[in-house]
Image 1 (cartoon, rainbow, N blue to C red):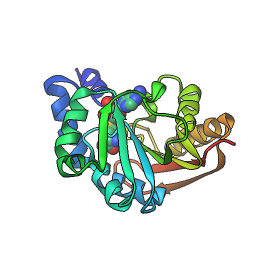
Image 2 (cartoon, rainbow, N blue to C red):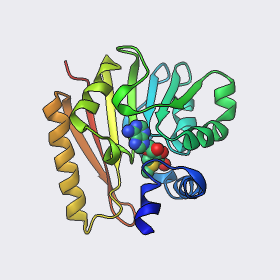
Image 3 (tube, rainbow, N blue to C red):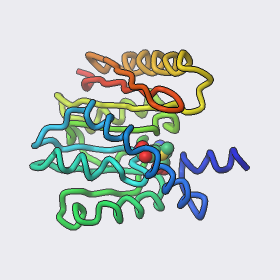
Length: 200
Ligand SMILES: C[S@@+](CC[C@H](N)C(=O)[O-])C[C@H]1O[C@@H](n2cnc3c(N)ncnc32)[C@H](O)[C@@H]1O
């Protein structure tokens, strides 16, 4: 039962998915605000968010990219519905476009985005190395990727850092440049960001 509810965060659906979306909107606000700060979005940026869930980050991203755009994919039709509802004004204004899609096959042309954000969903990416390459495909040559993760069920803060170090190694192995990281104290476990510039 607990595992089945846990699975809801990987692809929210049905009644349990509605509850998961509500819980994410309630508990992930600060982490999403921190994530957006880390990405340093500029006014003209075209931004992609992968796995936006209930869409907490979308509106803040669109405000920062005021002369640019925000697009996003999430595998869950229910989350796309919730995120579009939460960001209805921006969607209506044509500043935001959200659709069902997966990180492994992004429905975008080569070199479209200046910034890419993924908050608390890299743990669900089915083929991390291939998926990181797919993200690089849609980034501009000067593009920056930010992967943010709060491993809530890690046994200790040291384990969180081990997860981070493993991710850093994998991002580097795919060829991302200037790979860097920051940690924030959050409850019940710290969260981290891994940033990388698009592979050459
Ligand atoms: C734990 S939620 C996090 C949602 C949001 N980023 C937040 O911080 O509140 C993970 C989200 O990633 C989505 N997701 C899982 N696997 C995905 C994939 N392969 N491609 C795109 N989105 C995915 C899920 O549907 C879910 O909405």
